[in-house]
Amino acid sequence: MWKPDRHSKHPIYRQIVEYLERSIACGELPPGSLLPSERKMAEQLDVNRSTIVQAYEELRASGLLESAVGRGTSVSRTKWGLTPSHTPNWRQYTEGGAFMPNLPLMRRIREVVRHDANLIDMASGELSADLFPNELVQELLREQPFTEHLGYDHPQGSPALRTTLARFLSRRHGIAATESSILITSGSQQSLYLITQCLLSPGDAVAIEDPSYCYSLPMFQSAGLRICRLPVYKDGIDPEDVARLYREHRIRMVFLNPNFQNPTGSILSLTKRRRLLEIAAELRIPIVEDDPFSLTSMLPESPQTLKALDKDGIVMYIGSLSKIAASGLRIGWLAAPQSVVSRLADARQQMDFGLSIVSEWLAEQLMRSGRFEDHIIHLQMALQQKRDEMIDALNKYLPDAVTFDLPHGGLNLWCKINRKVNDSRLLEEGIRSGVVFVPGTVYGSEEGYIRLSYAKPRLEDIEPGIRALARALLGQSAVR
Ligand SMILES: Cc1ncc(COP(=O)(O)O)c(C=O)c1O
Image 1: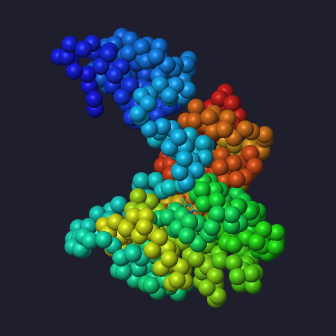
Image 2: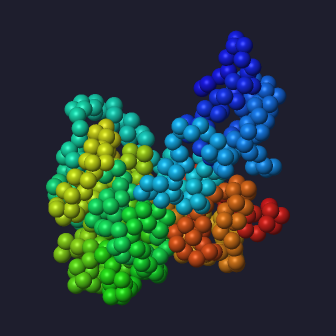
Image 3: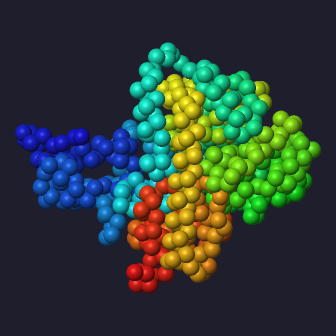
């Protein structure tokens, strides 16, 4: 990190002014970015606070910085033009490009979760650290040294992992896939991205569930797709709505998360699955089955996948290790007709030349190991315990204030708040009380719903987290 030169004849505060001017000019500090407080900056640069006060004062006078009570000091948004004329207009560049920014509520949630380790995180759709198979990974690393070749990966992903996955998909989900009809991806997110970018064109209409995880992704808007909504009921979407959306909008693809849907936790009934496949076959509309949660099932048997029921080659099946083992490995898969897999593999080559062979190797060791099955059983029991803890706490602290359906898998509880609330205000109130969750509007629902993850907080933090939520909802003094 840059520090002023104490031996220079140039005054220290001037050195700091020039350093900040350079950082602003080269775009390291874009317009609107928040600077550390005077005290923090003084600590970072090892100078007196009064030196920083003088430097900030000079930059404020020249219009490069602005300060407001309660909001601190930031780079001016309006004086961007003051930067030297040979500097590119970075603001224009950063506002351009094909990617829409993430939703403001999601950015806010990610920011507070990153910066405040004391917040109880019921927002992140992730396993807590103790639910990852850390010990198993350590054992596998001790037993099996990594001796793979270190060159670029196969365009469809490691052949060994694809072979193991084909067996896994057949054993665990009744899906008949071969090594050549599987693409390894860096998570379900990349599978969704490749599908929206490569198989669809701007202006195409697609159907997604309402509410839906897909709605939280600007990815669909970035691809220029028109989004049509399929309302989600207790037993999933209504297949007749797919036929209606085809008649009205000529939808070209359907995106579904039929098992423990994110965020509602609902399961698409078997009768509806069969009817949906009939309709999709009749209209020749492909279905994307996004299935990150079926192995988190607390039911005696996991629901049957659409892909296993599909006799006409309609379904593109997406899965990943994120919600069952390790989100940070970034390993996902897509099983689809071979022509589709080849097209997506070709596109992925253009993006990144393939995946990390180390992650793939580890994923293969993990999924091939008999002990992976034990891990899944342990995970299912631990998630059930956490879900029950959350339900007990909700019944204790918010018996009349929220209603929910019992989820039998997945990582989340979808709660309806039985009073009128403003989503972003409730989120801020929650953060002040020490808990963070996702307001339902992020998933496209109307106001008055929240998604609470029971997977991410530690078991012992679930009750205090719900107590904090109760304080946010009912007022600080109403809850002890
Ligand atoms: C329904 C659903 N699909 C896909 C993803 C993306 O997961 P990943 O890319 O980590 O596999 C998520 C993540 O929360 C999800 O909830």
